[in-house]
Image 1 (cartoon, rainbow, N blue to C red):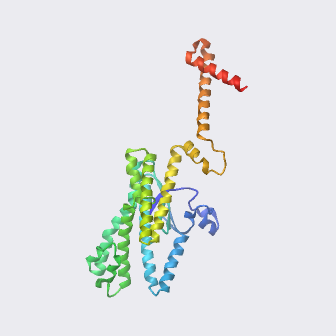
Image 2: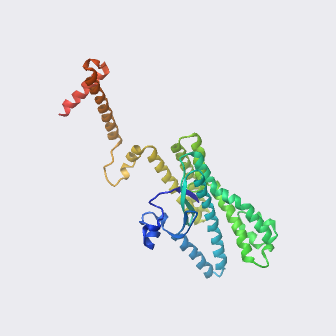
Image 3: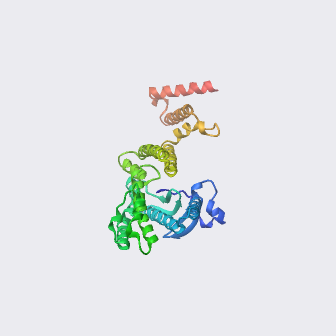
Amino acid sequence: MSWRDSNPADSYDDRRGGFLRRVFGDGENPLTWALPLYTLWGIRVRVHIVLVLFTLGRVVWALWDGSSAGAMLGWMGSLWLLVLLHEYGHCFAARRVGGAADEIVLWPLGGLAMCEVPDHWKDHLIVALAGPAVNVALLPVFALAIVLATGDAGLILFNPLQPQLSMASPSLAGGWVMGKMILVAAHQMNLYLLAFNMLVAMFPMDAGRVLHAVLWKKRDRYEAMAIAARVGLVFAVLLIAGGLIANNVTLAFIGLFGGLLCWQELRVMRFEADPIAASASMRDLASDDDLPSKRELKEQAKRESLEAEMDRILAKISDEGMSSLNSKERKTLAKASETRRKNT
């Protein structure tokens, strides 16, 4: 779960017309294939169609294996409510620092808040930390609710490797069993979301954004992004390996997706820092041969520099006469004249 710089081409627009067009847009970016839910505080909230299908699939599976479909809906609803609150934190922080935020997309791996953040490391750090800050603020709320509902403060702490053990507590017996279990599960998910976002320094997790902002404080923005993206690639490999070892497809998929985003961030920053060099390095990937090579770019720059120098020399001759030229300027003029004679 994280925020990303908003792109006008990716944003939802009620004026586009047609339900399918509002959901799929131009169809080019799968991240934007989402159903509109509501608009509040000027922020549109949409849910990705894959998340809708995933939720329906979990409910159908619960019915199939004889478990409670209501409990599954409550569990999924609690998870996505926590994700939504987390993304609202990013949005309000972006507005607080003078930026803008107008859309949240809920999707299978969490949420994305479409934000425009001022180009300063401190503002990016504030926006990155605002989402986890919401999870921190919810900790005492859940703790108090659990104590009031069950009378057992021991349920606040649990084994993170075996959270299901808490569901066997006698404190959950009696009335409203399902409600108590969903409350305890929501508390556990809130802690997992907080820990995962702040310990995995990989995009799109908030820790990746935090690392970039901290590095940006004392380094160039592009250098900081290059380091953060490379660190993210290391975490991506670890998650993929851990997912394969533990036979956890979700963990491996998160690592794969995060690795692709880190690679994409690295490419974008390289292009923004040096678009000519980046274009030249991608020459072999282009569908045509129109991109100039590095040698051609250097020769073009040399010609433009010589032409600019010749314009200056000719202007000097016009104003002060030929005798005003120094030896270096005379050599440059002679060389340019010789080159022109050869070309003709």
